[in-house]
Image (cartoon, rainbow, N blue to C red):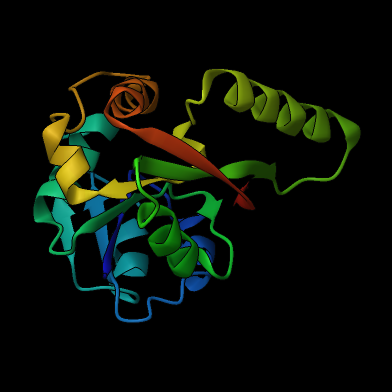
Length: 184
């Protein structure tokens, strides 16, 4: 099963190259969805993929456009400032092959040193453990079929990640992988 990696961008020139360099596509599809960047974001994206699409600005709108353009059966929604673990694609495939699982995500990690950042990581971990609902920064993934069955992303100005995760949770179990998605 191949994966479509969908990254919404808007003026991400300072962080996008680091994220894209960390991804070994392994035959998977990378879709960059631009919401109207005015910096060098698109020039950076073109070095990594030719599948760049344009959308109205807004994360939920951009994520929806990326899902619509996706040609593979697994959707992996990734923020431009997130670095996935090395074996991401194998982990995603294994997780989605578990009966009753509708989606998954990774643990949350911050790419900065210091106790305050570890406290934030711990708070997100506890919140995820209690609610079983991930943040978008945790790298949400699901089958395209599950995405379509729940109606995709609602057009919301914020909290689109919480909204879709709540609907996915009703559709099936959301698995939180131990590996960390590192946010810069």
